[in-house]
Image (tube, rainbow, N blue to C red):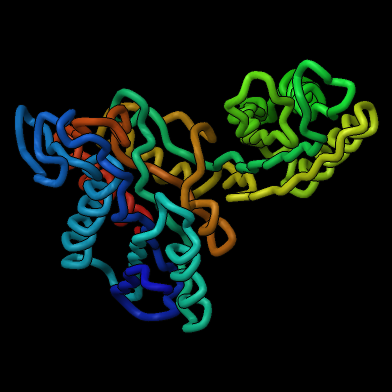
Length: 336
């Protein structure tokens, strides 16, 4: 869609009673300065027991492991089973023409998963230690405060927007959104930018801008958080006499797949192959599971993500093989 390459593939009968899906992406983040890498970033170099290169961890190896597992599984699959593979080229960016496009196409064509595994690298340090059963939502707020420019020696002739916006940022920064919920840590708010666009030290700027990012749990939704931000902005504007504006961008609501049959099945498969019982976590950033959750139950499990997005990104080759065995077991157990 809109020039983005996506892939849908199905083995088995359309509309089968059980259709297990996999979601992953093949796009990657920029490599940065290639001179900082010890290997060619896109060389897929095998060295010292690792596969090196951008996307090796996040998440081309996960995609490869699932495809290899599916090839093995369908050779012995029982009747009336179906596997669906959804791979996108738009996850690391705006994610507007990737998984959402695939799900729109599936809905229009009567394709339905009954459960889905997203293959993001979920393990912080050791294989098998963590899987995701939900994710926090993400809201970014863009503030502008408008005053009157003037000479810093004559502040009474100007209207300085900086203290007004700084007051609002301090108030937001010190506010406790919540103390966490049953499956989520406390929501977080971070002031990520504050800018006047003014290099002169003797000029009071006409406007200043600030950005706030909120990662929120299931105690909130984006609508409620935006209403709170606007209320606080109005309060600060009233106190200071400085006009303020707000624009909000929501990249995902929080969601939770409550612990149950799917998460227990995946956890059992992980433990059988690694000897480790994975923690059910909702930590970290966003993933495309936030789109899949409206289609069917979804959990995430994948590789160790220590080097994702980093220079010299790499993954242990043995862990890729281990992940393939885990995925094969998930398929067998799901259709048992």
